[in-house]
Length: 278
Image (cartoon, rainbow, N blue to C red):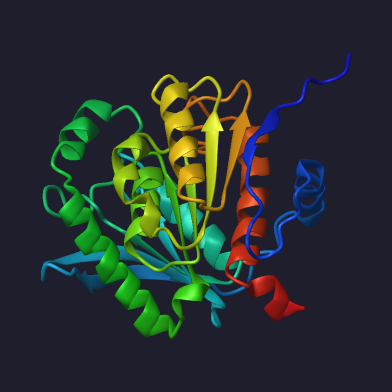
């Protein structure tokens, strides 16, 4: 029996830096590209960061010896836990200086939640404010720009769940080149500043996700089209919220692997690294 197609490209807008307009090309490029071999030396540690509001907080840093660009990595609702730290190292293995801020530092610093602790995570989520998040985002951006000596065109953002929303907020608040938003709930609340977005956007959704209604996704696409922004939306059938995380019951191996390959290709293209390597 022929296997049903796992994914479909729900919405495609041509990228400003030369993305193919054919969905099939995107799939084949990513499938053939795969993930590059892990670099032999990845250095990781916690760094002290100063926010725009003057507060200090910690962020998990991971990097190779000679990073080619910077990535702001935003956590799920469960903090900068083992999974997010693993994603940071995987991105670092691709040549990026990665910084994952502790967004709960005002209420529970360095909390590394388990995936059965959502009631506690919900309490922490309620303490977050847009102004506080923007302060943290700006502080991390300044740190990446200074420590990595990267222009804004070499900095992107990646986020999961809560972090998907924060990555979108970063795209509105900073002159970054790209943002990748994995099943980010609440993005519809941020659309009033969509005109500020400068870089390309990549969204991943699970068609079975009960937390992000189709209406919100359509609202986001409609507003971005109205503002003439460049974006891609990829929806995975039979995938639900948290499909990327191997520690969650909702983990979907096929969706996780394919979305990761697309993410790497997207970042490479939007940050101008493909041309640099060629």
